[in-house]
Length: 335
Ligand code: IMP
Ligand code: MG
Image (cartoon, rainbow, N blue to C red; front, side, top):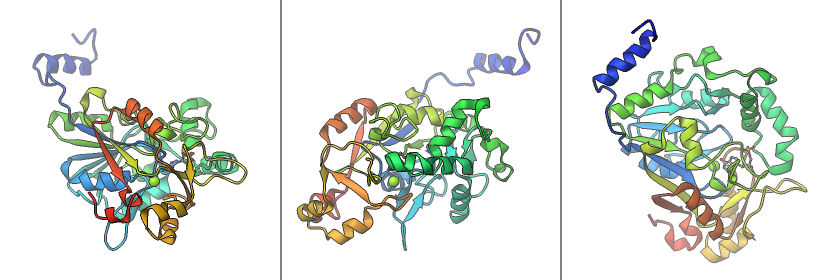
């Protein structure tokens, strides 16, 4: 009845009657989240398992740097899914909850030579403006050790909607992105209808969650599995497995001068990790720098209380334990 309904409503009713939407929800999505304060090695895990999926989805913004192993040298992703270079048949999706730094995004698209039909960016993904990074430099960087990429400021402006200053620009407003912008919800629906396997890659770690972490020493998003699903636009019942990545020794970024990057169970000097593992101290110091801002990292004892909380918030089906060589250098080739 097109007197009561718009034509598209009629299409929905007819398609439902014909059973074209399918009757059961197949669990096709695996989610990777961090169990600590980020830098758990999610990029390595995601790139390793990426060949088993048809669609790779990443959430979050350019404050997260996900490093992947590549010859001759590793590559750090700030926007694109970490499996991009390890599975070239997979479609790439940045959902409506993504926060985009345009220069970094363009650089990654160019370096990875991504064709327009491979990458889809939702029209409602948020754009970071120069204002956002400038704003964080004077405040968040000095107080909590923020990466200062403008992600928190841009997210706050998105929440302010028409009251935001400067005005909000979304992916749909950026002419240069037009070949990549299309509603990602439709793509995911089609992927699910076709039985495609989807890998959803979270950023940061549970201890940095805006709601569940140690506020204000947190990032600007909910880093748990539910937060990642919301940003991507994926229903909870779609999830098959949740893989939580944990390090043997959690890290945080070095504390800013006269402030702290937040609580950790028990800080350790890198020399102690070197002593226990027999790894060279200089090697630890040079590799343990943050991927986005190249600042030194703090390190601490494994935090069992945080593991318990992260396990309860994410209900992982699997845990990937990384940095086992920090227990003993004899584990260098452990898998
Ligand atoms: P922001 O999200 O850049 O504002 O940073 C807030 C806090 O989260 C700081 O302590 C950052 O060092 C930390 N953080 C943000 N993103 C990451 C990440 O991807 N890995 C590790 N730490 C992060
Ligand atoms: Mg990182």
